[in-house]
Length: 300
Ligand code: AMP
Figure (spheres, protein in one colour):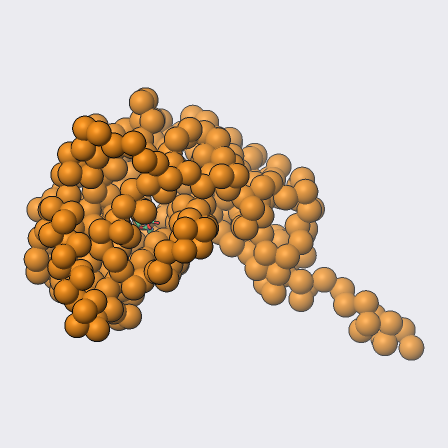
């Protein structure tokens, strides 16, 4: 396993692989790796000749009052995990090599970046879109792997790849969860034992809402109210940024439950901000709706 920290060397290395006809899979991460990250790595390994994992805590996606300084870092542990997974290259650039003193170009994906997390974390998705564009230009992957856990992020990246004609396939992988349903996240490490227990409310709330929709309860106001109620009743939850039913393409809040819907939540337990989501596709629930033709036929 090679560890590369200089962008130019990473770029030259990738070029050589591509000239040799090899495919490259990239898994961008901020480190403190867990099974969620490793599921992306496993998929990239299956589908490509060469797997590159980037580890970079991207300062420009953190707001001034956010957790950049205390974000968990575990370079030794991460290196060991990736060695065990037989990853080919870790790309681990210095901040100064990604953002030199004169750095003037940012990538902004409009509209879909302004909703949900974008509304609560101004500048966050501009930072994400900029770093992902840089990583794609440096590593030149055939495929890049992202988690559904950060659903809005994955939609923004798909849009930027399309808008900027980038020659890469964006692959979105399912959310990996702890046994009790909590989505794995590097930020779970901030939670003390009681907070960790309380955090399961997020999965329970999403699952309950999803099951209700699947069983035919498609009253959006009721589902949203129920989600908010479940979350706010948990005493450890200090605030709820959003919880409700959204359009998985536009990221707008839906006025009715129709077609594919995204149930999504962002909240704080103590100072820790956690997000999660569940996609309910129309085929999961429309089958439950009375079918006019069959009712008519039955009446005959
Ligand atoms: P991060 O290090 O948090 O920036 O995450 C790096 C990548 O791993 C992103 O594409 C995330 O969506 C993905 N990821 C994080 N947690 C999970 C999870 N529990 N399951 C699947 N993918 C995840």
